[in-house]
Length: 129
Image (cartoon, rainbow, N blue to C red):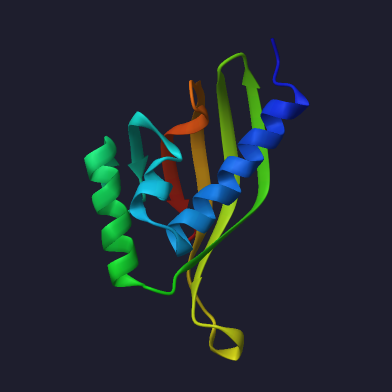
């Protein structure tokens, strides 16, 4: 069974919810974007499991309190309860003329349907140059 429009909408919403939660929300809201046994490889560090994800969020927010994550060109493909996703990422800090790009790259995701809806099960970030 291929993904329907409702699934695609929910997964796109997951990407938006992830960005908002890491930039403005609590660690718990951000970690809720992941399955309980999720793994994230940021290209700088690896976090596996809920406790490590909560720590990852805390460290990210401590290092760059005003970080902003922007995703574009989201591509999703899947069948049944598992999907793959990819999105271009740009992380910035500052505002207006003082905006500085911290990194650009690509998220490559494995996304799973859970009892609570679609969640990231694995995320690998590949940084540009």
